[in-house]
Length: 178
Image 1 (cartoon, one colour):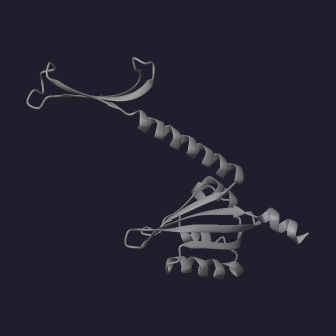
Image 2 (tube, helix red, strand yellow; image 1 turned 120 degrees about the vertical axis):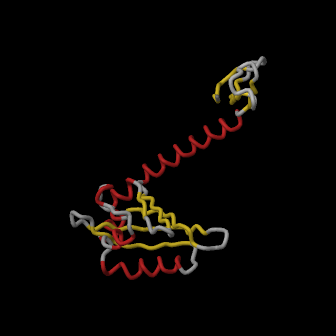
Image 3 (tube, one colour; image 1 turned 90 degrees about the vertical axis):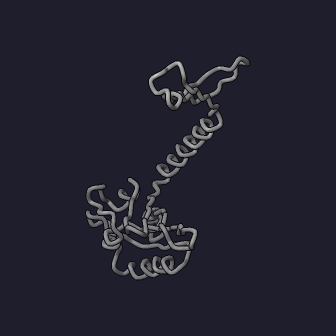
């Protein structure tokens, strides 16, 4: 048996505890012989609450800025997009097949060479990817995107994954053209 509980100490301070109860080995049917371990997990609970608050703030920032976030696992080739990234490209989750080719098909032909060149540079050992390109959404609308990513490597220095953001700068580019 294991449980967590919020408790008050004799001094009135609130703490969180983890309580574990186990039967003594060799006495599996004798509840008069148990081991009870009570552990103060207050620091862990506080760290967890702080982490949840930080995540909430980060999610609010991502939503407010409408940042598309993408993650590519190099071993599997799987490319994952958040909801904002899908929205930038005008796609639903069902319409995106989680491949690099699905993204490449959206990039305008005149922009794909530079995007590929920057991507290849990261694959060859670079640690940051940055590029601006245009995509065609399924409805035909052209969107201007600026993209940045960081390479994540393992202990041996091998590229494990890429994590990046895309920001739709279409309105900025349209204003510049006026």
